Length: 226
Length: 119
Image 1: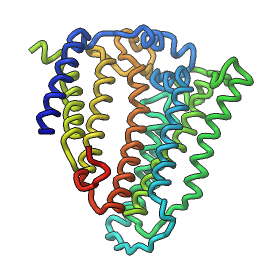
Image 2: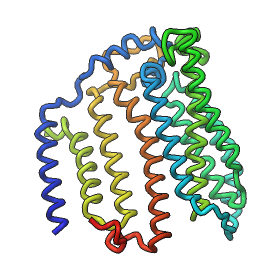
Image 3: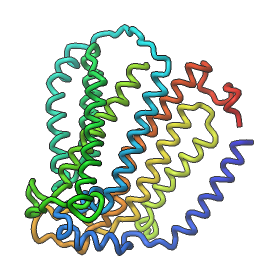
Image 4: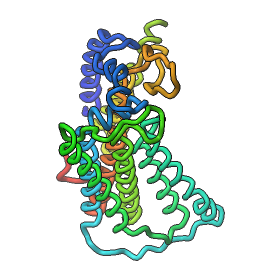
């Protein structure tokens, strides 16, 4: 009975969607604002990666809100999982030699690659969110390969808080030296070089630390529970 | 064939969204409901990206001088999806942690057996 009702509901939704989608042409330029960002983005922000300039500069305040959502989800996960407050003594089977050696060998390389991704966010595809996810995958490898190793939560919390603090402080500095919150008050430099685009690389480094430590602490909490 | 060429991304995206909705509505295992939520999330992201696509377009990055800006794809949906993916991961993790807590409390993941969760 429930299945039939669900299928009927989905058919209604599908018909409505397809009727409205038939009016949207595929593969053509639609928004004026996207065209404006492409034409004026380098001149106004100094970043050659237009997606980065949209995320950090034009919609920087929105990104601050999204980072806050991520922060609250992490806090909620920690609060739900550690509600008991007791530390369980877990018996772990040590990983095999291949996994252990491989993870010790690969972990620094993964960290360097993640750092490269978020430092070059304004030049190449990538940025703070992607680099943070890569760094968190490195920590996941540590938890798989070196199972006795525990990374201190204090360090995670410190990196996370520091990242958020740098983001807000740079926004307030923009309010002090520029015209508005998160305005690009640093010199923009020449496009396509590492030291360009003003505040964008600094904010992306902060986001990289924040996202990396948040995702790593999510992994830490989930492993601690299982 | 032209119809399929033009709308294959929309069809795929809304196929994923409908599959996710079906799983959420019908399945009773909580883990499966969370997997459905993940599929729904992926479908929405794919739809937003395909709305911004321009036929034979390139990434909106001026990586070398003299690149033509006329056929770059729309950067705004890409910027939105970029953050939506990370937030989707965090929300999935939060849902999984709630599922773990629920299992510890009731000893079951089947929504039918958890009396307070019935609808």
